[in-house]
Length: 366
Image 1 (cartoon, rainbow, N blue to C red):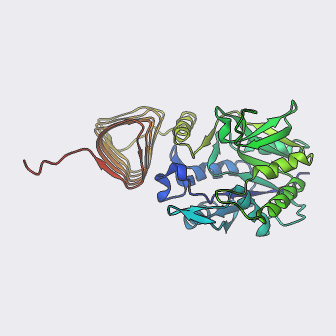
Image 2: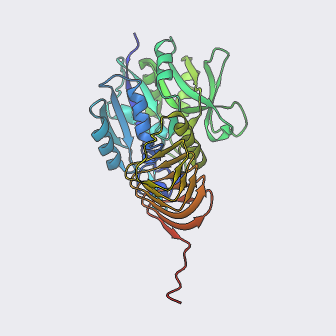
Image 3: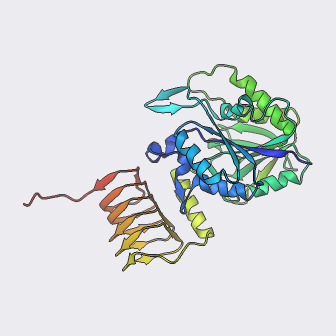
């Protein structure tokens, strides 16, 4: 019988590649198709794991927001715990954390998964990688196999940006490299890991030793070397190939593409209120309290709550909560929360939370 799972979610990072959107909230609080990335992930976990499963959130940046949201919305199903990953420094007012390997090691340090653990396996999911497939597939594959674990992988166009695995003909991983400079494979680690208790102890033993060594400047404690150590020690770790693409929310282009995919696969509401003389092109998601007048919205648009749109054309874009758009024509854009945009015709714009942008010139009565 397989051991019970404990879940680990590293969610400490700032999300620097998604600034300015992450100035006011964690990157996992960005919305796709009407729900935050974290809410999508938590829904997938509820479909995969039984009620009462313990989850450890390794927090850092905006830790209070994360703890409150999870406690308010998910403590009736899961048993959440929180531990803060202390930052190792600050660059340009942005906190720097010691890496994914260090974050997962905190499960050992806090006693969430103690030494010589024999009762629990470990399921790790990354909050900035949202699998279209969900998590049930990899967990069921693990439950029905005799392998020591599985790592989710997906085929990518630019493997040099990811940790890459090389599986044999049976799908067992033989090698893995973090951000390879030379091509070795296009199967990239996609953010979900599951291990039995024996492999979990091995991983945490490796990380415990690794974090005891000081870091050089600009280095982090990586997770991939601990996984390679499993392979080197002849643990049988399978590569679980995802059927669909994984949304890497650290990449704005992937964020927009992921929004499009979710909208195409979900049942978007079609009973829109406060829409006057306007056309909503599906698939699109319109939040609560939204007013749309004399506009065309969609396809592939996600509109947050309490948004006002007037005399505008918005396509293939995301608009955050509480924003106002007047005479705006745009596509392939990300507009944050609480923004005010007026008289803008431009594609591929990125507007951070609470920005005010207008091209209207006042003539002061002349």
